[in-house]
Image 1 (cartoon, one colour):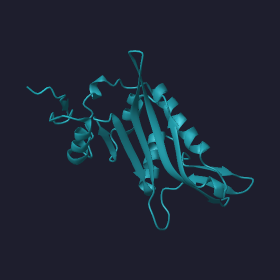
Image 2 (image 1 turned 180 degrees about the horizontal axis):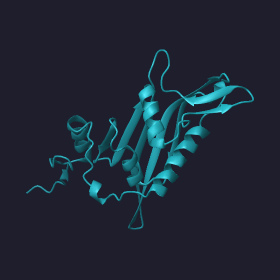
Image 3 (image 1 turned 90 degrees about the horizontal axis):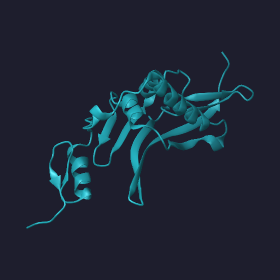
Image 4 (image 1 turned 180 degrees about the vertical axis):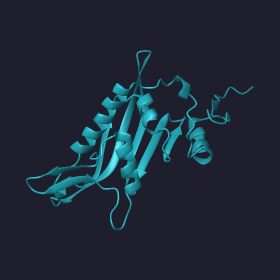
Length: 188
């Protein structure tokens, strides 16, 4: 009689003996998964909640943008208490959205000019990707495309659990990665 733990894939119900085998299966068979098995349990956020978290994203992106050569390069920020339902309702219909049930992790990325335009729509703000310093005529901006490459803004959400004294503490963390650049701008 076998006493092995069986772990089930929430997408195809195949069982595995370790979490690692489940992760490998999910990566090989369900890499671009958009199905959220527990979607019915995620309440639709109010417009006030959505507006609050959208504003948070805009403010944190802009805080990472500077005007000097020291402000360019890879940027990252996290919101440690970002609700899962907000992330899902913001990004679930996007082409590059995916969900890993085994890791309870979401990803969505936007690249190039098309990504910038789509984020203007999602964030409901045309100037989300830059800030200007009129005194020095310099601009800090999210780099999404240049003459050689296309870059991405990547949003991720994952669940974190702390177990202590027979109690579990759960929270969701949203992380955003992008490339920042700066340069001069012309007054029109």
